[in-house]
Length: 444
Image (tube, rainbow, N blue to C red):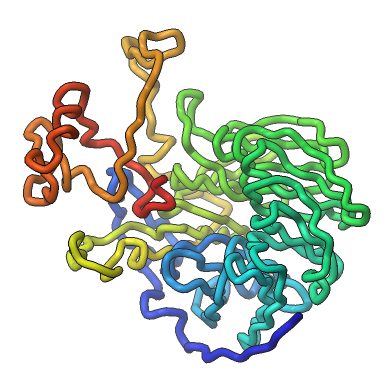
């Protein structure tokens, strides 16, 4: 069933949205890494922009915001990145898709697909089955495919008939999906299973293409399927017809580096652009090799090229600010970190002298020292990792003089947490050990 509603649109995207001067100073992240602002425009967005898509004529960039604050679809004029429109949605997830029926967005907890008219902001809701939880959408020749995480399936059909389409079960924890160029097959990343499901768009027959760990995005160029394999730090190239692996491209900085997390793919001309979420950079691939590394903001989630410009979407923006108003003992979400950590979009000029990558991040890791005990066959057989939620180092261990802490920030010191202090005294004090998750979901 399709419902049509009209919403009130603001002339500006958000109060938090605005251009950041291209000459902005480098930003120091909480983990000590640095992100630099290259020459070009940078604008802030809402919380956690997840994916983006350029209009067919390249004049407009659509960005899905799906963080702690209410989800939305935002439109920006290119190349200026001037905010055009901000459309509030009851749910949103993943990457938007431009079609003749409007810009499609997977509705996640709304159990719907949204079709947004970019000219008016009108939202049409295409309801799906309850608890289907759509997380990705793709379109080809009037046919739409939707990955529904709630039932581990793919729906295929005309937009208005998706509610009645037969679910095709492909696997749990689904990621993005895409059509083959001729529209006959659909490729969907199955993050829990180390494979991409290749689905026959006509019969629904499913074939598995084995991949490296955690396939997080899929892209088909010509007859080649490219897969961003986040937990292996690789981009895999596969024959789209047979599933045969052609090559793997390691996108980490050195063989000793892990954790760059390639999480999105796009193509323009002869180049493939790979955003490395955990390395704060974008890798450019040409001919199966790394041609360049470009600086992004904090945790890039998408990168799209058009002409001589690259637009990078950063999930956590270009830095952070002091959260002086937050009281850990208060109730509610006043100045909650998830609500004040905004994303950004930056524009980089391609061609000529490209800006160097950020000085820290995965590419800044050094080779392990020769005497380290952390090696294959070494004396350490087991590691026990104890996770205690929702506390910073300083809140508990900031009173330990051996560590790099601040006793003024201690809430639960040695008197309250004697066991944790005893463990730290006896086994080690990880006073500069960081996670990329500031809030529970990402931190876990």
